[in-house]
Length: 156
Image 1 (cartoon, rainbow, N blue to C red):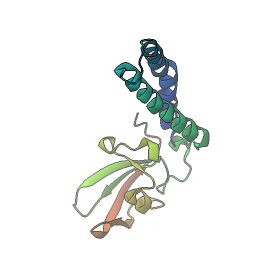
Image 2 (cartoon, rainbow, N blue to C red; image 1 turned 60 degrees about the horizontal axis):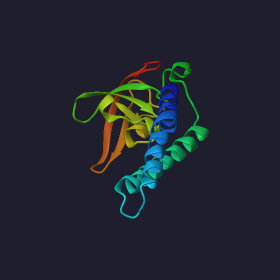
Image 3 (tube, rainbow, N blue to C red; image 1 turned 90 degrees about the vertical axis):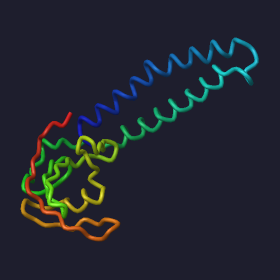
């Protein structure tokens, strides 16, 4: 994952642990003191929300522990597409597209951030400028021509 993606996940986890979880725990404690928990909406909803927060914290903790942070700005093979590359290509629709290959947790199609494991990401991997690669799509294999490769862009 990129350094920006790592920081973003850390920020989310700390926000959940420092802000959201303590607020929900306070609500659940207050609701539990109101008597019958079986029909107490605040208690039931609060416990459900607390489980969701704890599940997300566990997920983020595991992802951050196992993350391999790769800084695209330090890429040495600038003539080929690797993780972190920003690639401009033309597809079979004759339109230029620009995408940045990022980790699976960082994808954001609206911002042109695609997973390096996606079909287009896999097809572009190790390609050079001017190369034509085939992308596996539901409609079959589609040719894509690499126009430009850049590294070190800061999309955030």
